[in-house]
Length: 95
Image (cartoon, rainbow, N blue to C red):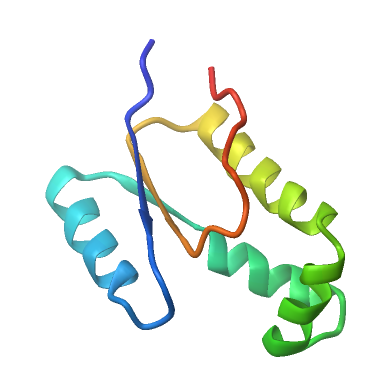
């Protein structure tokens, strides 16, 4: 079965979430927000978003962890949008 996944990326305050919400509502798609997971990881590390951003630059395993989270979501869902500021290469196989 073919997955239906849309990825919306862009800089801070570029309108990603607005566009994502409009498309999700129109198509009745779920939304996976990388930012929510990123904020959760920052909190788990006891860091602000700014601190965690700097930390991630030195710890590429965090990008892999975020990618794995999106991959796991994709394995369990169809018809969804990824709303993200992509830092990594999303190369996982989602079948």
